[in-house]
Length: 332
Ligand SMILES: [Zn+2]
Image 1 (cartoon, rainbow, N blue to C red):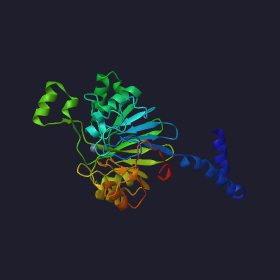
Image 2 (image 1 turned 90 degrees about the horizontal axis):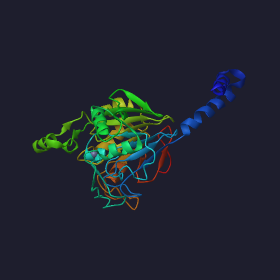
Image 3 (image 1 turned 30 degrees about the vertical axis):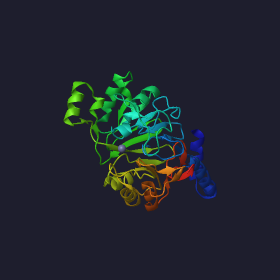
Image 4 (image 1 turned 90 degrees about the vertical axis):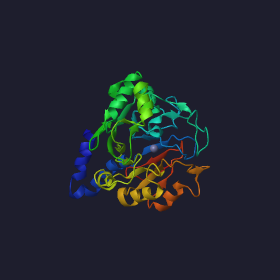
């Protein structure tokens, strides 16, 4: 710290040592900026981008590891790909994000119709992983109380369910986490409630209320700001909040259509509203690739063709690295 202060003092000293000072400043700034956040997709099929793929691990340069929307392709809490998980993020409680079930093993079923025959009701894949890894679950809206109750019911610590409601943020390890709006729904399947109440709700076609669906904005220690769209339509917040306030440089954008923005709408969000430096496509609800190459005629291909900035395809198990400006520096 003392050395750093001395270097800074030298850097701002005028006249004779100005150029040397600027060099020192650059040397101080560069390593942090050039450090990378590692992004590793945990999809259903090694080296492919498949229909149920949502889960991504983000690793901060300091080692803080974040699991985003584990869904159905993480093979339960014992999946060897997980490693240490400090934070679990769940955008909303629909089964393909919370994980009402998961696959038996990586590469089971087909890329367009993956197997997810192992039930995770009533706990969910996300809660089982959080308990096994002693992770914090950070959610917005009214979801923290639901996760606290699930953690308590399954032998975990309810205090590990942490709130970040719209406009606020929490910092865990070296990652600052905020939630942002998602134009979607967030009904809780009565299967998670169970008993007579769950049955009565199911019979009536009513889902539980756990508040609004969300997206996230993460700020990492190298300065990288990432927008995780979650399931959403087009929202004005994508321009006024995600770009205007947070200035997100990397976006993970859901492109699957029907349930969320399709490839054309998602491309509009990227090109006109968020305007990041690069994008990772997500939630395509199709076989986006064959033998690791984007499939001709796919929604993934349409999205790539329409978007003006680099689009990176999340091939399961392949780690991509992003610097503070949102540029992919390795693995893309
Ligand atoms: Zn979804």
